[in-house]
Image (cartoon, rainbow, N blue to C red; front, side, top):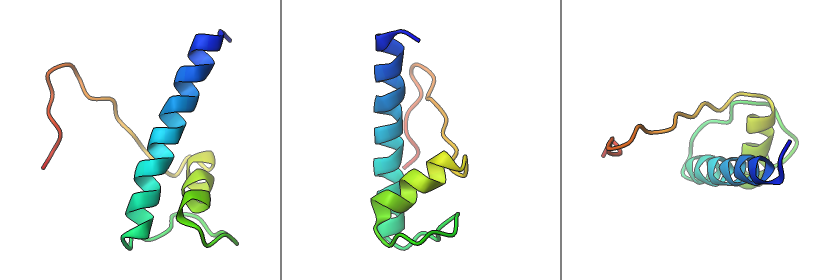
Length: 65
């Protein structure tokens, strides 16, 4: 695996974990059973368990508001 690809995967995981941690912090239900209470740790566990979905926006597509 190239270093660039590894960096992009890491950046995606960080962005996804951050967004999911904010959702959890605002009251979203956890998707996995965990011994952790911190939203970031819980979000990372959910990503590792493939319980968080994501979709990359197409060029020109705007975010839902």
